[in-house]
Length: 193
Image (cartoon, rainbow, N blue to C red; front, side, top):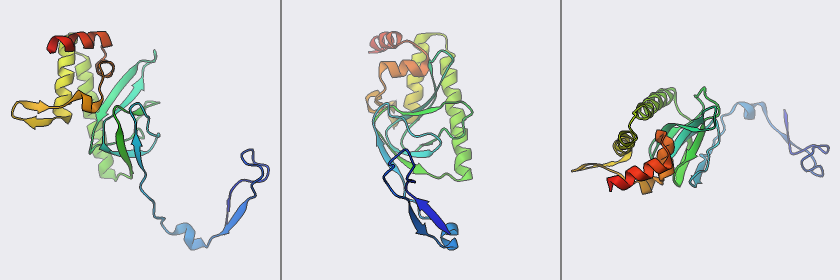
């Protein structure tokens, strides 16, 4: 069996390159290939490729969709040790966006991993939805900060401790997650100091 590699002479991409042919045995087509692990280092606001699954080694990521007016809807926040994908969502598009500098590694989840991920995704979305239903802006922001501390913080003698700077969560980022304006978030955070 033969496999063609390259571009044909009439290809619009590199018309001068000839097509080369590699001879392959039928065994080569059925033998499992060794795949290397794809590891990426991404900057804040970078978006991960669609349809793949990623384990977060370092940094923080959010999954988001958009409403009919173009406003972002945060579906989940993810941190080190979590894995994330948009492959199982019925919403389109769902973007996997870095909040901070992040290091991710492509994973090939088992069926058990997928079930666990979907349970976490549902819980994550429900908790964010519950926070967004709080009418008082002050209470909503406090509940979001508490939720972030419980989810990503370190336990100390005074509760959970976590730095929003480590997550690169700006006032605008907090506002996007909990459905408030940046001005409201800034005003409330200044009052908490």
